[in-house]
Length: 274
Length: 283
Image (cartoon, rainbow over all chains, first blue to last red; front, side, top):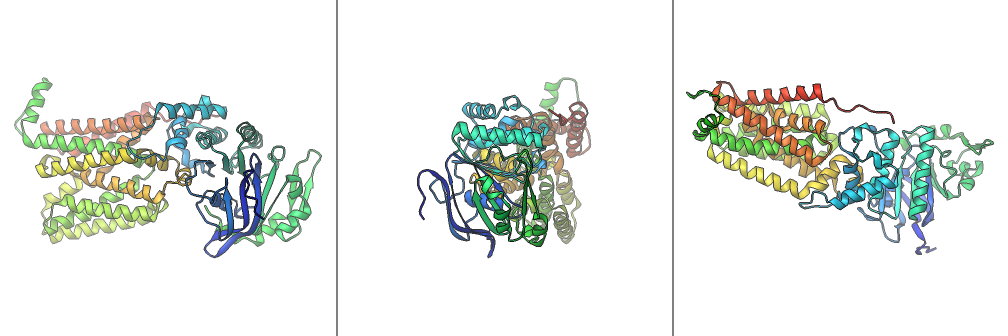
């Protein structure tokens, strides 16, 4: 079963995760190849952020093993760029964009260091790479949702990571901007040969760009190509209830029956880590 | 307050101000406190923790009154109680530190405790008054030394933790994922606030701490978008109003803290009126 070769960005073996003795999901078993763009989907509270916390080394798996870029996850890994899910309130501050992006590079440096010219230039380059150089001197509090997400992306990219973890970057965006953001991430993933995991609620903006999907529901984790995971059979097995997947002519997907199942497992909400 | 008269010759005025030891003491302590309050206050504003800072000063009142009762220098009671209170709040977490009902309940209790200590001391009203509203003109040489030492320590500490403190203040979750312990950063921050509050109480007192710790920083945050500039402006404002307050109080028979608070308030109104915070612009 050992697939811990140099082509894998992530290897998850029979892992379960949760808080205390309660598993949010169990027996996850998959690997992700380097350079893949992966969507992480599933209902609220199914444990998508929990997966990220394992990869970041903020939590440990209850069972099984997790390996990130060939190593056991450790907190503060500079090879991972992370964009947490944020609330708009957090950014109601009058600080220029460049200063935030720069912290992605040197924010953990102790001892009489007040930022260098180079870190400013690197931050500017990171903003340029997400098409947001014009925002460099704008105050964070004045940015729109889409602009903010570009800035956060730049903050995650400035340290030149190999793995990118994006927690619901499209949550507060309209459909058009969701599409723009996802295409931007795709371009960056290809240009820099990054591996990226992106948590999302809605599969449709992601369908044209994803290589693979991790779907978490009802304590189960399934991985595969989008067209394999998004079938009535596969999702029914995952939820343990009848789920119907419909596709229209443009290839848009609608999943029916999830609301009822989700209601049933309402207690998962309580264990969703904030 | 004294027999000097204000003239239009500023050099002469300053000479007459500085010929008194109590004025030299007040300027020294005031300068140290203003710099520290301005800089620490900037982080308080960035972290939206002004209520926690306010609470710490009230907790300090019980400590100071207790120290007076025990016959100890009140600054030690202040430092001990604010540091203890700060560490407890830090351990409860930043979210807990913004729960205003809980904090309000604790600070009311602490004020009450302070009231008890004051009455047990058989009420020397001047002591209570100076704790509540500040009495910098009566500051002793020892207290000036303590204040300057504390201020230098805070400056060194901020220099040592500047980037991580800024990172955890602006972007907590990313900072945590990048390996910073939020609990450690919280404790560091609360201790900085505790010490800054303790020395600032001598100048403006427990009840007026906001004026020196929060308002200059809030004004600076409106003007500057870079942290270092924000800190510099905040410290400069705190310094200016403190110096002006001391200078004016030398000639007029009213409390220094009144002039400091008035100066800060006027500046705040001015900045609010003429420099509205940039509104959200749809791209």
